[in-house]
Length: 91
Image (cartoon, rainbow, N blue to C red; front, side):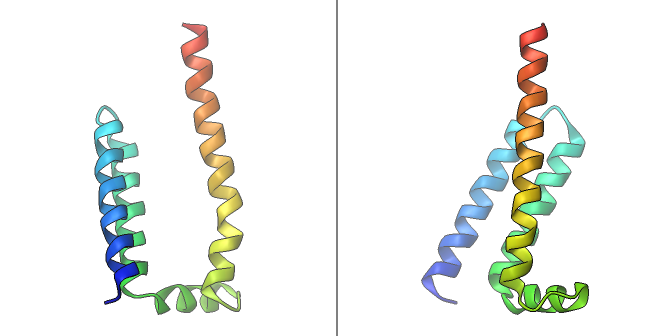
């Protein structure tokens, strides 16, 4: 295991812990955050897994698959942030 693997694992665990504390009132968000960061940790430990998944869905490399998924993740985050902001402004 290289230094970057250890750094990424520690960061994913810390962010996962932060997300569970942040989403403590909503079980679905907590479970999603745990799934997200466990899968991130698995991809750090087993980097070839992204290539296998990418090949399965028809993309050449795992890096390209992650690049294609990133805009959708960002859009989801922006929409969730907007919904929370809108609820706070209305109340």
